[in-house]
Image (tube, rainbow, N blue to C red; front, side, top):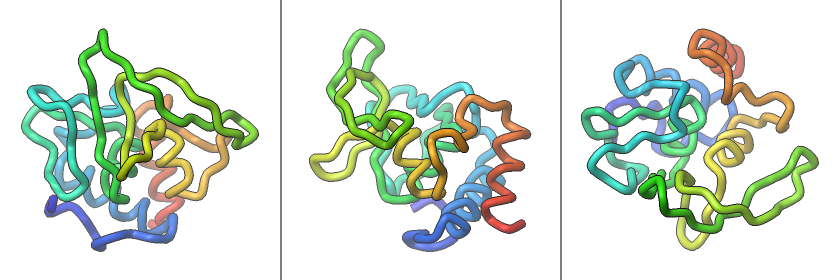
Length: 143
């Protein structure tokens, strides 16, 4: 596993946020709010593997990764069907090339992260700049 994981399976939103902050502090080169999961030279990143050199994960990507989801980045011209959540929390199917999977379940990375951090759709910060994302993670972690 990555050295950055604070607990084997962070459970509470505060534990998850703390684990994400630890990972980002340990691997700042692998943190970039412009990419859900940028995985050069690989298609997937398993939960207990460290991101390879050149990989970049946003706050949501790190959250999904550290809570036991495999991150998948298919070639840009390939997409697969995943479950997404709308603003009301209702599920719908959509086609994407970057997603999180666990077992036979495929979900949007942002939805997985929102649930792990205890956030409603309107409270997410996935499209914010890095300083704002880090500030929000610190608030959730109680740091």
